[in-house]
Each structure stands twice: as C-alpha cells, then as structure tokens.
Figure 1 (cartoon, rainbow, N blue to C red):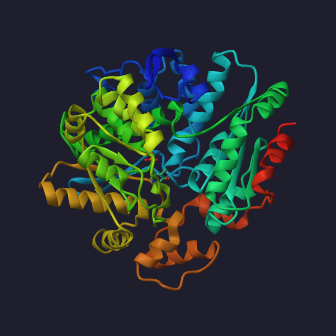
Figure 2: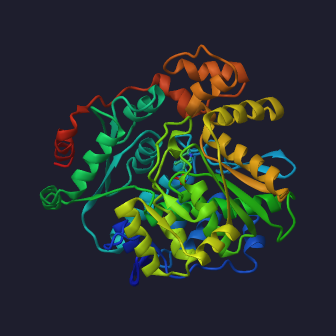
Length: 495
Ligand SMILES: *Cc1c(COP(=O)(O)O)cnc(C)c1O
C-alpha cells in the first residue's frame, strides 16, 4: 500500500518509509493513499480471535510489506505475556445498557499511549531493516508526563533503538517522575531539564534541527527520530481497538450485527478520534464521532463553526494530556473529508502557521457536521462527572475519561440520540489520584506513592501493579540539564 503526504498526494512512499520518516519532507503527514475496506466476513472472522490476532488482521490491511508472521511477532511482544494487566488488552466495561467504556489503560504505564507505543518500536525497528537503513535510531522526546514514560516502556530493549526522554524538572507529578527515573532497560536515558515543558520541548526541537549534531551522530551510526503522535506507526495501532471493541460488543450480545454505535473520545492531538474515524471508513458501523474537549475547546468551536482559531487563552486543566491548542492529526482528517484535496489542506495549514487561524469551505463544514459532534467540559464539570460516576455506578474514572462522559451526557441531552455509545477511557484513575480524591470529597491528600494507597483504601479498587511496584524500584536516573546543555546528554549517550 502507498502512503501519500496530506500536502501533496503526488508524493508517495511505502508504509516502512512513512514510518521511518515520521513526517513528509513537505511538512505534511503521511497517510494511506486509499483506505482499505474490511471484507464482508470480517466481524464473523474476528469475533473469536484474541486482541493480538485482531491486530494482525487489521494492521495487515494497511501494511502490505509486512507478513502476518512478522505482525504476529510484534503483537505478541507488544501485548502478550503479562505486558497488559487484562488478557483482553482493551476490555469493555458496561456502565449501563447502552454506554460502554473502552478501557485503554491496562498497559505498563496505565495510560492509553501504551496501546500505540508498545507497537511503534517494533514497526520502526522492522521498517529500518526494510528500508535498508543500517543506523540505530535514537528517539528524542520531551514530555509533560504520559508520553515519555509510555515511549520508554515501548522502546525498552527493542533492537536497533535507543531513547532519551527529557522532562521539565517542575512540570510533572511525583508519580510521573518516579515512573520515568526508575525506568529499566539498557537503551534508555532520562534527564530532567531546568524549566517548564516549553523549555524542554524547545530544547528538543533545537536538537532536531541541529545539522552539525545530525552529521556527528550519523558518523557514529545513529539517526534521530521522534515518537510523536503524527507518525503513522502510532495512529495505526489505535484503529485496531475500535474494530476489536465492535467485535466484543457483538460477541457479548450487546449489539446486533450491523447495529451502529457512536464513539466518544477525550481529545487532545486528535490521534485517538482519528483512529475511530479510520475504523468507520473501513466499515465498522460507527455513527457519530463525539469529540470531547476540556476548557481548551478549540476543537469544539471548530466542529461547530468550521473556524479553527488557536489565538485564545491556554488553560492548565485537570486533564493535562488534552491541554493542546494545535491538534496536529486534524490535518489527516481534513485530507480525508476533502477527498484528498492536498492544495486545500496546504492552504489551511499555511494560514494556521501564519495567522493561527483558518476557516474551512462550506462543503467541509457539512462533512464535519455529518461525521462529528462536539462538546467541552470545565474542571468543575470534570470533578462532578467523576463523583457522579462513582456514586451512581461505583465505577472509578480519571479526569480525561470524565471529560468524555460529561460531553456524552450533554450530547444525549441535546440531541435525544440514544444510540449505544463507546466511550474511550484513556488513563487509569490512579495516574491522577489527587484530582480523583478531590472529586470524591477528600481534601487532605497524601504525598508521593502514599496517595495510591489512599485512593485504593477509600474506594476498594486495587492499585494497578505497575504503579504499586514504584515503591520498591531503584531510581536509576538523576541527570539534570540546563536547557542550553541538552546536547551533552545526547552526545554522551550516543558515543
Ligand atoms: C494523549 C492523551 C489524550 C489525548 O489523545 P489524542 O490522541 O492526543 O487526542 C487523552 N487522554 C490521555 C490520558 C492521554 O494521555
């Protein structure tokens, strides 16, 4: 299968090349030239498969240069053994008769980033081989929390890869820092940067654009790359859980063959909900895609009005992984909804870059309204949604998931649409103990890892094993870097 740039559909490459490159040379995102359709017997074939087998089935439709045997190997390494605490990998929790929570946080870091970042390293390592690239790839990432740890776990001891994660000294929670500095593996490095997330992010961007550094590293046999969510190798594994969830709903008799379900996704960079859209295009009977935002509600306004405007106040919210004003993966959506009109996408992205704002055409607005619904949720509403879910259903959810549940309720109230809905649950509540405890009425929260037990004792819900294990882990990394000296860390690790 061919992949094309969203800014030039004449520019095409293979899947392996797209995964190695990450970004198209023209700044666009690499995207399938044609979206595959699932064969008509797909659901009956997949119904009795396990998650790993469904992954091979679905990813195989997009990755013609990868054999089923190869994909099976990666699926086993990524999701098999005891990597995920639930053998279903992405199990469904029925909240009521037509509301189903798709739990995407049973992986090693307890956040949905694991679903893709467990698979990406295998795809990347194999793609290097297929494109005859001899160098070892080194992933550089700046993180505000979830992504860094998930990338470390995913790349840990994967052949032909190394990874360095920079995090802001004062910008992550105690638990998040502990998760990173206790990371195991012979090919990993973690370093804090004095400053905030922007300082770390800017520092990493500088390293990527440093030509002299690239040359030095090339001589040493290394190639820098990023594990960013615009890489096709991160989007594709996410398509699988929507297909798989539909199979599970069928299998459990929750829905009839061919019955539609809506999907509600707490959205930041637009990767997760884009994957649901691709599943819909492949033939999964998905109705509305409900895009849920926090107070950074650029996407809510965009879907409603067709105007994307990032010139607005930025809020730090209780759902920090969605605190984003520019959702990169939206570009792929515009490309699809405009029937691959690359000139149009190029124009919108140019406007976004120059003015922070663009307005889409009337036909695109129509297409947006047909496919999507949207809504947003304040911190107060997030807190209330956590409390309500606990008191009414005895089900504990994290603040990101709470945003989705609030927006779903808003949508159902407004439209009267009672279609069964799948809600993407993107983090374990134990990753955001303080916010969850506050929502449950506790004002005096404990410090460090004690907060995990505090939430567990209050609710009777078990602490996920990877977080419980933090108490006994050795701190392996204590590096602190000035933002001007991050390059030394890189040169030191890649000798
Ligand atoms: C990354 C993340 C999101 C946002 O997902 P996108 O694919 O960027 O839209 C939502 N919730 C959590 C917990 C996340 O880590």
